[in-house]
Length: 512
Picture (cartoon, rainbow, N blue to C red):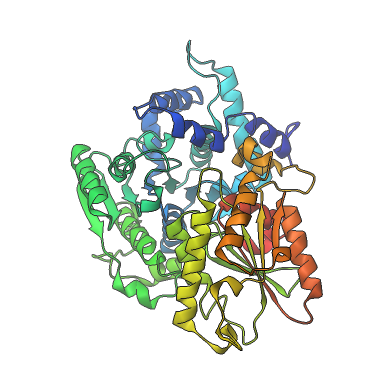
């Protein structure tokens, strides 16, 4: 698709010349724990593309952060607002993307088209080129900051009625935090698995997350560990939030089939309901009646919750070409989220749904620096718990209950490289650190850990592969050897792995 002579592919190439998210995260791990100048730089970038910081208030922002569940909370929030006021134009900005960078900017639930993305991308690019920076200021922002500017410009151009912004990293110094006065702010779960990942304590993480609280703006959080909760409470007071609310799960949600499966979604749905209730109390047209309490769920709220979609999170799709293959996609990448993934997958409605046992394949990877051995241990231990909980005939062999290690027939540990020739889909290039793509050391370590954790697992069924395309080929070769049976494939450990699988396996039409 073109804008003038410039195409969507040109935009992706230009975008990938900027510092990647993965590189930014690596730099964040290594930098001193001091307040940086990113917010002032972000305001300057905004000025260079033609907007003042105060203009952002016109976007009517709901701002959401957290270490777990923030994306799901954004998806619920977006869906509720669209169902509550169908005439509105609702903008949603999230990260990372699974397959196409266009997924990060959605209008009424739909990613920008290639034409739209190219148009807004180059309008921002050209404005930055035409308005040079002050001395010692960077000429171009890094990848995530640039994408946020494109999102802001898109939402201004399309005159959205409401905007849901998901924080990229942290909160306090994130570019999304330059919005002076959002309508409401929320912090989802402070997952304890993230403590230490950036060299921070839970209190320090909470302080960064609570940095999105603003003077005169309602501040919400779900229940948190004591240390984190007290820091958030202090941040709300320090930043003069109009109120600070610790949300308990709304009981009425338990009787609703949420569009995003898993018991852990109750917390995220509760956050979304509370944010939307606050937002609509202030911004809804007079013809829309809003309940006095958020716990009184209207039909529109229920429809929004039931119809929420968030690709790559506890998602199952049937392969559009190989109908015997069913893909189970979850980008879980912490111990906590992997336990939630197993809770979802190893259950009667999902992975244990069949009367006859399918062939099961695990495709797994984790980013460098995370403990693959620990993650696999979490998966195996939780599978055992689920099998004891749901012990059924299909889980037993002649010796008794099937051991957790035999739950999968094949395990595949592959790099996040998209294609077998070592190349990446352009939209996915920025998500991979180069040293992770150059060798298979991490995948070999994970495979060795599996062999140690599951003694007797056939070595021939443990696959270490250099690309996602290789992994998909193993699955499809296996499917041709299954005589009339089904093949279930659980893909987890990394959102980038899930996104690459959707791309290579041709699942975009049914998954995104």
